[in-house]
Length: 226
Ligand SMILES: Nc1ncnc2c1ncn2[C@@H]1O[C@H](COP(=O)(O)OP(=O)(O)OP(=O)(O)O)[C@@H](O)[C@H]1O
Ligand SMILES: [Mg+2]
Image (cartoon, rainbow, N blue to C red; front, side, top):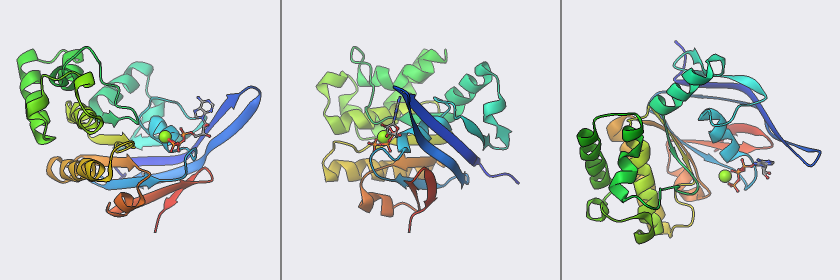
């Protein structure tokens, strides 16, 4: 049986002003369904690059990625886009909420884009906002939310289409420790209650250590972090 997610020998470099930066150098990792994995590493080590490649937002120079046995980089552009929309939820380093829409509308947006039933989408958006403790802020626009609240809205939005895989890039960046711990607790709940597999990049070593499995990105490679 193949693993839920298999990443094999991924290479990724950036080229800027004639200089080459080799960020990922033969990264290989397997993640089983239902796992909750933290990924740590120094600033600039390639954690965001890795998440972008796994999330098919960026193509690697070489390497293979299989998702439930399917070789993702062999799919057509349309199939990759479909895979990304259906199977992956992102929480980015910056929350990227749409400023002119309310929290509830932001959460519902992925379902509206997918042309799902509007009423059902808003019902689900409400219940997700409740889950992240923000039912009372549903009508607030991003400018009327705190940083931690915005991150929770972004998490609710990432869960809107019930992704099989959640990729979170420092969802607690710029938050005070207690608020950060609240987001991590939410991620653990989502993983446990909804069975969503998650990879969480964090600079917070204590929070990373509280995750069942820990990975470290160093010198272009991913390894077990003890
Ligand atoms: N578009 C780009 N063009 C050129 N170099 C880039 C580009 N994006 C990232 N890099 C470089 O690639 C390296 C890895 O970047 P990445 O964003 O993956 O790091 P990171 O581990 O997420 O860091 P942080 O913890 O600060 O978010 C860095 O040295 C960065 O300067
Ligand atoms: Mg980053």
